[in-house]
Amino acid sequence: MTYDILMALIAFAFVTSITPGPNNLMLMASGANFGFRRSIPHMLGIGLGFTFMVLLVGAGLVQVFDRYPVSYTVLKILSVIYLLYLAWKIAHAAPANSAEATGVPMTFLQAAAFQWVNPKAWAMALTATTAYTPDRTMYAIAIVAFVFGAVNLPSVSTWTVLGQQMARMLTNPRRLVIFNWTMAVLLVVSLYPVLWQG
Image 1 (cartoon, rainbow, N blue to C red):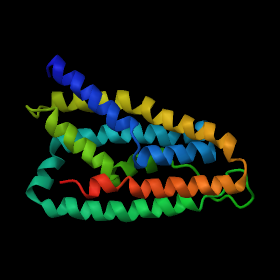
Image 2: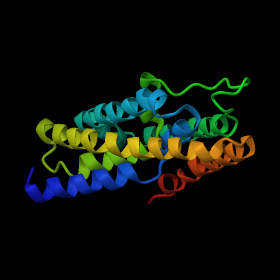
Image 3: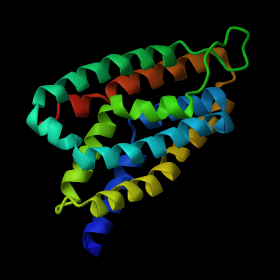
Image 4: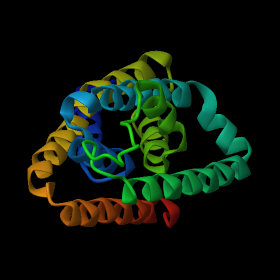
């Protein structure tokens, strides 16, 4: 991998990791509702889960989608259904310290598994492994995965901190309900670019 391709990959990884998407919006909601410390497993699950996903996609899953395009369509439909369910859960989350609070932050394994039904994660992994590994060697794919792992964790942490800081303004139950509904709607809206691309 040349220096120019590596720099372009780092820029791509940063832009796609820091911009709003299902992972970041859910972490912002988690930071607001559960705090930074309780959201750490969620953040680590995203960072490591996506890194592993890039490795597997680069190692061969992209060929499955090329050979059986309907499998990607099925994945998109299942992803949308699951994200709508998550949006509903975020919209109806009660404050973590309230008597009626039943929600818990995502675990490491749940967050890692979520990458496989996250349309933005699929778009990122497929683009990265096709655009930045022209020779398709495992060495190049490993570099792509490593770059995403290194860039992704600080990016998603930023969204958790932002949510935690917003929690100070969300002590009023009405404001928290508005925030949670806003996050739920933005989560649904974040599906638009992936669903309607090309």
